[in-house]
Length: 89
Image (cartoon, rainbow, N blue to C red; front, side, top):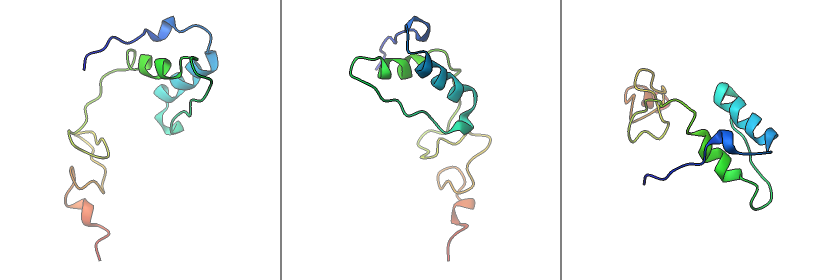
């Protein structure tokens, strides 16, 4: 599905929402943003628009953890089958 997204810079008002999304883009260790608000306040539009300014990232296809090809999660059964059995008894 190839849909046009609304430009992030065109969203008016909602400065706290935009700041929170940008902070999470810069520092993923924040863990995410919970967006809530009344209907029609551009919640989904802002989240979708953010993808237009983020760089593309490489991920392993079909991986539940979205592992990067160069550094798989040590417990990922798809990307690291040897390390996935560390907790086997």
